[in-house]
Amino acid sequence: MARLPRLTLPGHLHHVILRGNNRQPIFAGADDFETLLVLLTDHAQKYAVAVHAYVLMDNHFHLLVTPTTPDGLPQMMQAVGRRYVQYFNRRHARTGTLWEGRYRSTVLQPERYLLACMVYLDLNPVRAGLVQQPADYPWSSHARWLGLRNDRWLTPHALYWALGNTPFAREAAYAALVQAGLGASVQASLTDSALSGWALGDADFLGSLQQQTPRRVTRGMPGRPRTAEKA
Image (cartoon, rainbow, N blue to C red; front, side):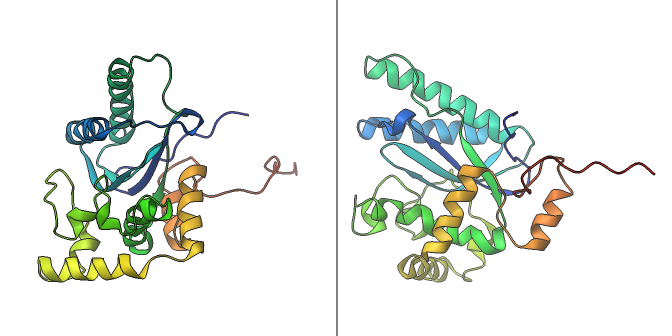
């Protein structure tokens, strides 16, 4: 059976995950984390991909992005992945693959999942037991949206701007969302949608999305499609 192509649509919000092969570490120190961030910064700009949020974990990373062209996201991920492997192998005197195949991604309905997915990314290090508070973890965009760091390469989404009329109001509102956390069902939905490639949103959003691509955006019924009966 042919592999389902990734769902990539310009102008839409995408949740992206790239894992290390066999879940092996893809970062061995601060220099590695910083190198990947530099690569993301450079290639997001080159391929016109707006990065709204990120978290770099020991053996994988997440991005929340909006590409502006049909090929921008795959071109960015291909370039970042290839350049980082070259750097990592050279620096750590190793050879061979680093990634667990291709990156995973899908499209999210912003009104329902933009802020939830930002919180999901921020809480990843807490769930993994690496820190007690998201602000204690240096390798995520959390500090940017709380006004603790100025990462100019990140693009605030319109729904983040809508949290308040001033930077302080937005930062306070977002901090409250992170403090409130996410339910287990939302966490599971965000993980499953990115790994499976099925879009996540309400029926109207999914119906509109399906009109923009021949690729199925949701799980279909098993088995072959029915053929029309002859008259």
